[in-house]
Image (tube, rainbow, N blue to C red):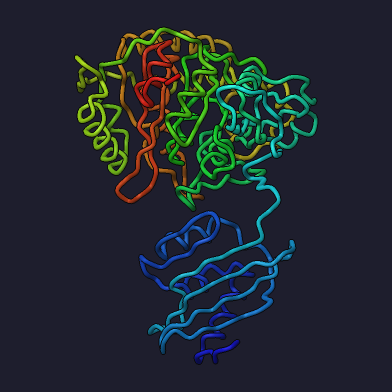
Length: 507
């Protein structure tokens, strides 16, 4: 150390290190300044405020084991000092920890910290398999783009892992690509790798019990959103430009909203599902996410059936659906409406933007839930019946519920879903419906997701029951957190909906 350390500083530093290695949360909290502007950053992002940092520590289950190799102190002034430590993680390599300490009334406390650790060869929270690239493409309109493929799609030479290590250990190696993978490769996009998913795609959280939660770089300390979680994180992190995923109950729209991405859920059946592991076939769709609207549209030109353009002009806002959003998300969507269809004339010449009250049946989310669950058990019950203990608690509870649905209840749910489909399509008509992609910003890691999941399903089941195309457009709240607005369009008007968001594809 080139500067003499102020009295008590190194004692506080070593107390912090001891508390970190023993996961002594009380001491760690006491050694960080209890202020709303206290900072802690790492490769995953910046956490602001003592309360946010404390929740992060409480949810991570302890820090990786390490020792301190070097400590350097630089005195800033009589009450401030910078401490830079070189760390030696047990898993190898060298890291660094930089802390700004302040002498306060209660002693030395950290007011800002940054942690750097050796990067893993592969972030296994995001990827099951990755290459440079994993699969080389042909040439075409998507040349130069790279795809993170959700671990439900067949990729030749790889098994389908489905987010569950027990399943993956016995899964056969695929001999051919899924239809969507083949189409993207043929259009010139490479396969960067196979991205993590929630187990059997039966979740909206992204918190895989076996591999961890893929990071959310736009909202550090918050969940990534699922079940296309790995694909979304790969795109948000810049590891790939296209996230290929699925949307059954919102698994494109929710992670896109949580991570500030564009996301496309097409009309049911418009993109072939050949080579895709099913969850609930009457709701399953192939979807994709990108960081910009133009690429979202270009992928659509490859995967969707060609159709003569018919611009969508009329937009409707449903107060009953908007009311499901938290105030910060609702304000962001209201601003979007002012700057979008009204301000920029998104509706086109002669278009309208109206508010229309819908008497939405309260039982629709339950109809969706039961019909989805019955199909999920039909798809996977044969394997899970004796292997439910291989699942994480959250997904296991869903499959256990699904196993209890009897034949009569399943038939009734299917009939109710068919009626709901007709009703949704009548309500939407030939218009675009604006609603929140998710009711809130991404919840913090470790938060109770029960209420958020219920509100999310009330929103996402509209397009799901209707089998309708939906685009999630990224927005930002006043606090700087990502959220999304969802544009639901008429059936088979997928390209028109993409044109509304990105503009017509230029040849």
